Length: 339
Image 1 (cartoon, helix red, strand yellow):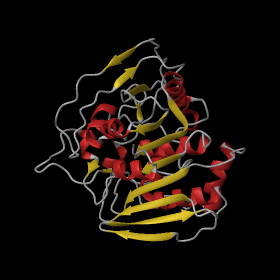
Image 2 (image 1 turned 90 degrees about the vertical axis):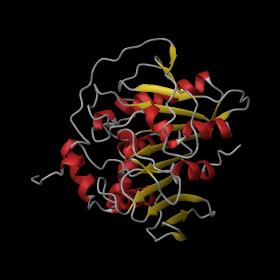
Image 3 (image 1 turned 120 degrees about the vertical axis):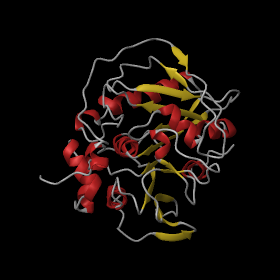
């Protein structure tokens, strides 16, 4: 395969190296976040790092926020950052812990380490790391199980959201553990099984894939052949994304319709200022899949309005962008997380 990869794409992916994991049976609060933020909603909560949660086969970090005073079993939202990002900066910019405190749900961040990928990308393109109970998927499954054991978590209300490489890893989690998640969001991401190494990942990011819809669906059914149900999937993508081609959003739609053995229709269209939303429903009228297309929107997490005069302070904030809709806010409503 001979093609010239733009430098911006090339920087997003590198070969990964697996190193032995360290285990420390304790938790540790992280430093207080700075006041600089993208969203107009302040996020003054603190993430706590869990230094031992299991075998950690993918050698990832676990950070969490659990709102105080919640007695009833609460929902859990798993958040996965993109390349060049970390949990603390992503949380400040997205406002997830502020939403969690306001509405009474727990937030779990999985964070990549430079020892696994120097650009801090999750290794969604390496089959050995996105296999059930192995690699990075195995680590995130252990994090979720730790939260379920230690906190009062409603097992029927576990969700996952990922951006870019985190969105591709969210696809893998939803396909591999459909029984675990009620719903998930793939933002600027890719379908499950889109690549098998770094070079094919760069190619599919740039061009998309011509794989037939049924083949996309087979990838899901092969890893979860006994799935009794599939989670509701929300796909968000900018039509001007120059890092991950919009063709990948269309492939994700094809994948989940085929996995559910639903006909490929155009869905129910709803327009909003700055984009459109297409919904697909089951025979009972329940939404099973949506595609939110943001017009003239690039690569990043849509967050709505921003502070006047705001400029990105770090690599994380360069991929947190103003938009007509805020993905975290909309997902809180869609997933019925409001208190």
